[in-house]
Figure 1 (tube, rainbow, N blue to C red):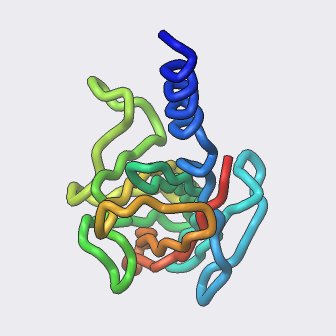
Figure 2 (cartoon, helix red, strand yellow):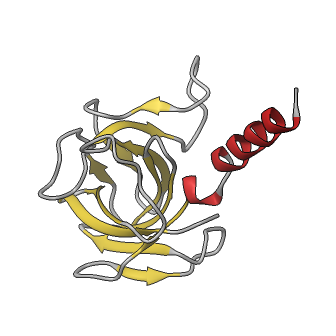
Length: 167
């Protein structure tokens, strides 16, 4: 490979590995959304509360999609959370959802949740869920862009806005 070929290959490699192609999603405070720092989670955590559950939400973005991780903690009574693929207002629709609380036989990712039986969390229990979201069009995010995603709660999905950051 000549010098020009090497330079072009190196440029392509650096472009594809650029932090501008992926990073954290930082939540934006808004109605029903507070910012929190929770043990074991990144500093940029959205906290939602209601209907007997608290949800701590963190997110990541890439050229392909946005992904959020939700750590639900139930209060004194069990809660059920339905996770649906439909959009909520301006929020992007979920394309997949997984219960990552414990291993699921035959599937290393976890138990599928999207449009399946609701997630049930025991009284004073905890659950971890991963949700991926589709893009309304094929335009990838860039650092600084905002995206609104639907976060499932027992009383329905809540729209949470995030800002795309770098690695």
